[in-house]
Length: 199
Image (cartoon, rainbow, N blue to C red):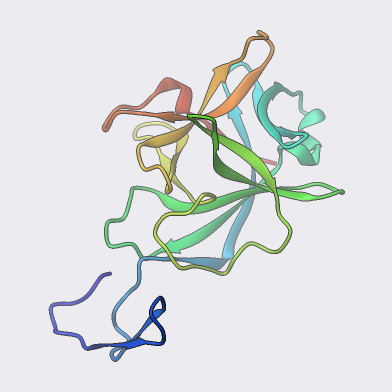
């Protein structure tokens, strides 16, 4: 947790053998958490090369070719909700959660495990996005950062800090999937570059 140079008093209380609660006597300590920025939510389309846009297709995240008219569909209009990041070891970029609202349901993007592989999927959103996330790592929080010298962005996972949203071709040449890819520090992977376009 972050603290100033002053000594702070923290009181601990053991309720039973497994539960420990603490109360901070001074409220100028900041916790490692995320807080929703209520007036900072915007809607964008996420585009990669060859006029392909990120879409949610039956809970699968993939890139499809779209013309101007097709881009009006709900499945490629992502709500990007910003969060205030109180982590003392802050990553570059803005903490965000990405979601899509369609006439039938709302889904949001999360990190996941598929066997031994790290991945990303669209998960049904059964309640509103949280106002507060009481930890510094979360399956749905990504750090959106602009790539220096460009108008492109990349998204780093808060849960897996060396991994970024990327795209890769599937077995079918027409299928380009959204994946979570580990990228060495200070390297910008070409497959992690994305544009945010106004809907």
